[in-house]
Length: 359
Ligand code: GLY
Image 1 (cartoon, rainbow, N blue to C red):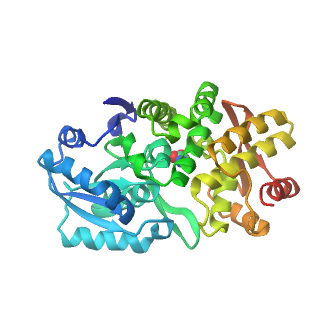
Image 2 (image 1 turned 180 degrees about the vertical axis):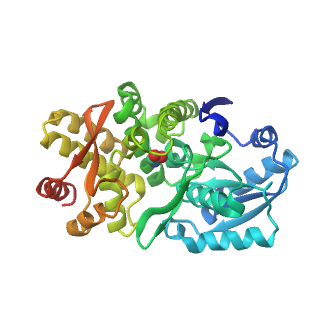
């Protein structure tokens, strides 16, 4: 099992990267969990991963309660949080209890927010089962829910006690989910690491065929890039915003698509939008955009979307959290492996880019 650490002083925690659930008990024992363990998952993950996960817990002498929610972004709301609180109160969960988020980004965000607020904060751990969650959302402590159609607008920074990545959990996912998860991996290459970008580009087939060593390698690099950024700027007062590359357009498109497009698909389109914007601003040559488009297309990700209202996306941009003094903040590439933060206030330019990625 490979271990790396997110260094945040007394809130530091390990990320374990492995190919099964065999060490989950050891990880919980190391954490010193004494109280009830509650696994929060969704109906799809429960079916695919629940039995193996429960068996691994039981083999280590742990018996867990389970709370299953309906899969999908539509569950990421205060109503679900309220149901979790009721469940926790019913089973008399106390301050020593520990929540386990077994699932993708939605489960991680919901579970983390419930853990951050129940009894003013109890322990939780992340067991991400999608590529998106393994590459990005399980690390760094962003938790929360959507509200009134705005993504992630209610939430808290609250770090897990550990992250346990079983790369083989990806085998039960639909291909579309794997492709979507790769968007965050490609994002990490563009913002921080050209070699990683090239590695992903050259190994897409191996990734899609679940080659264990390749998956472990990309997991290691994803998590170390993410950990390094979070260590420097946990609460996104500066540097961490670069992780939002592709997300300014991406989140606005995601809300306007009524969540018909997956998060990673919207990020993919958003990254193309950010490249086009950088190109129009003279920051990069068109060949950088072409290179990004090539790898996205090779992965099977969209580089534009049809049937989405441009004006709605434009309005959504201003509901998002990525604003500086009322102006939009874009993360724009200077090259593959390097991005910079830019306030853009040019409505014509923004709409021109939108019209090209939303045809
Ligand atoms: N997913 C972006 C971040 O964690 O900051």
